[in-house]
Length: 251
Image 1 (cartoon, helix red, strand yellow):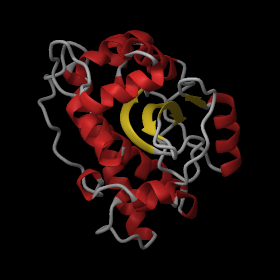
Image 2: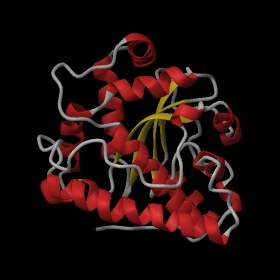
Image 3: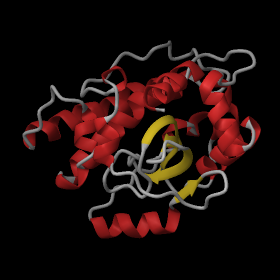
Image 4: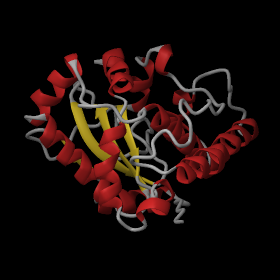
């Protein structure tokens, strides 16, 4: 399983120039949103703490798209490791763990590589678990979120294609995101390793509302090298109620 981390800002810039992606309807890129501004407006209800929360379903609940063994290893080993290590980094760097993790992410350039990798890993996974649920029939967003997706990407199907392409073409390990940019527009992008749009060092900036993990350990036991098949099947699992909650909290 591939695990990569950059040891310097120069490496990060090089990687994001090569692999960065930001897509919006009619746009090839988006203006940056300062992470501090994004964090300032995030409601308490969707902020993230430093402790790993219980998985909101059984390991085998997503079997139609993600096998139970992958879920168990992913949650109890990989994600648990990020939760443990971010608290170690926070203790070493005098971070107030009573405040939300988003506060650290917004100023991640002030912290160590250990903090960056593990704060990102913990935040990303805590969001990822919530972005999924057992398969439901006709799984689509509704209300204002669907209206915004249709307005921004012309159709739900075209949105899925663009988001899927961002996930499938992310070089190496990383994530694909649907996020709200500084103009309150839905935007699609991807990040390397455990970076996310809240980080002040990220090439894409904004408030994330949907995330997919495309590290190999998220899918390899079931799909091996077939990342595209994993991404296509993952749509069955998207918890649009949760995504709508995040969208409505900031839109």
